[in-house]
Image (cartoon, rainbow, N blue to C red; front, side, top):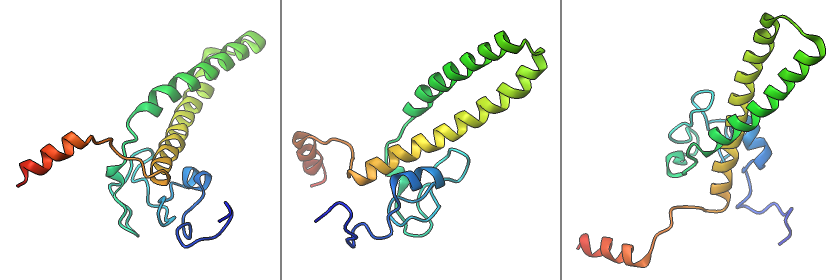
Length: 139
């Protein structure tokens, strides 16, 4: 099988870029991944995929905030050194740009992580001893 083959397993699944940009369900491709700017829905309204089973966490938030903050502070310092605008110009430019950049970055990063977990069938690691103990407890 070639990577570009259109097998039934891949049918209807969006590319990782499409899923990240539009908040598409990794299973059916419907735009049902988010219920808010960066809040995941609990499940897909079209195919029923449970998004809560994926462990995306807050890792992207810290990393993106630091990277975006560093870039925007560098740009603000450059603008201040080059043009010396009044303070209100900085507020008008950088506050909305920071807000939009962080929200858009979080949306893309969280979608990419969830989509990667889905594609790779990632899940919690389970040990055999733990599985045996849980099986004995249910008997």
